[in-house]
Image (cartoon, rainbow, N blue to C red; front, top):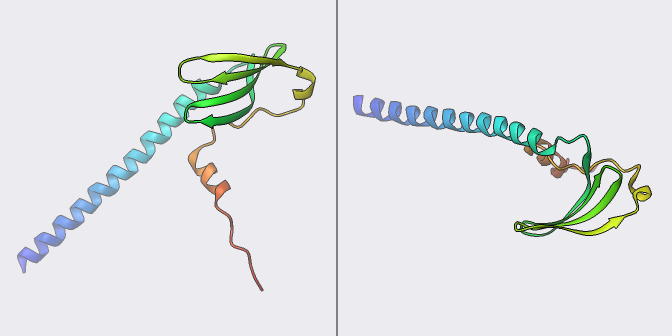
Length: 117
């Protein structure tokens, strides 16, 4: 009888430790994500208007920098200016959403079930 109780207590203890690890990992990644997203996306003089992924670690970016709008090709090795675009065509567009947190992204991807009456 005592062996069964000890085994049950051991299993409960392992489960509690696992839950604590998952909770700690959640909060640590949340804090790190906020810290790095603020540093990466804050600029008074520049904004990313649009972003297109071409492959793994390769992007086309439309960036407004001061009075210029540039089309940039970005890869892990370099950043190339591909063209200077007409600023008038991009004046009223909001900046691209670069740093959406995981929960917001998940909610936007999950579709609510439709009611079929």
